[in-house]
Length: 344
Ligand code: NAD
Ligand code: WQD
Image: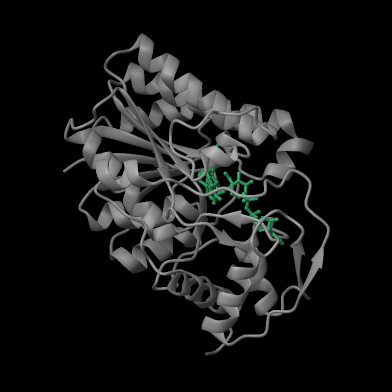
């Protein structure tokens, strides 16, 4: 059975992917420096899978530490690289932290993969590389133009994709799958793992659930004057467990030598655009919980609307993000209630 190195494996998407990998019989070793997660996530993974995965508390930028890891696990067949800093606003204030962390960790990883004969990597990219697609490019497919990044964070994703392409060009034995995520939301159906709040949430869903739990007074909706049906922004909200399953599919495609190209790219979304007001109204319907909100001005840097054309991933990965939005929002609420010890 294969051994998969999962960097950032105690994070939101990484932890859900580790669960799916383990449930498909893969051996996993997690590297995480706990900069945006806690060791309790490992307990959550164990509670779901009845197995505690190998875990190394390491910084992916630590060449010596990571080399020791590759020496300790000579049977690594593939890497899924989630580890990164991901807060768009923070990246504007601290660009060097983002370039060091997000670019540096990938370079260290690729150097050590090459030195240790590890030939497969799945990389966490983002729809943010597309910026605001033109009308004619919506829904956005993998051939849509990459536009100038609007933040250092977005730029690190574009640069990392180029680093992977250049490295694959120089090393024909390297296989790369770039997974461009849209907007992951929700939590595991057991409510044993989910998105961990780190300060005031930037993202919509954690802010919604914290408002519903009374942690926040009210949700601020950033603008209702966009050129969309109800005036609020549109996104492609994908269930994190569906997203995790796509990683397993991509990995198995790689390990079975089924890739058509040395570097493959997939948009991972539902293929449906959903507005902020639709999220708010659906959340209130499915939970029956009050959700006070106020419409305020637009948030700087927000794009108006983007959603995926996921037909390539549906076909090539034999995968579809089809969990109903109501169930996804319910999972997010169950997780929030668990975090806050809110009874039914
Ligand atoms: P997350 O912050 O929950 O998980 C990232 C994990 O990586 C955390 O556990 C953190 O402690 C760890 N980490 C960060 N830097 C590290 C380092 N140098 N060494 C070791 N561990 C390190 O984030 P997430 O939402 O799970 O995102 C995972 C990946 O997916 C990231 O690369 C992110 O850019 C990408 N992504 C996320 C979203 C989203 O909306 N969540 C969308 C598109 C792409
Ligand atoms: C979604 C919509 C907001 C919060 C970000 C990153 C992107 C990726 C996913 C990493 C927008 C509105 C939000 C709130 C609101 N992350 N909103 N009130 O901006 O699409 O993408 O996360 O790769 O790189 O940019 O997601 O959840 O922040 O916002 O009205 O309190 O919800 O204006 O329209 P976004 P988001």
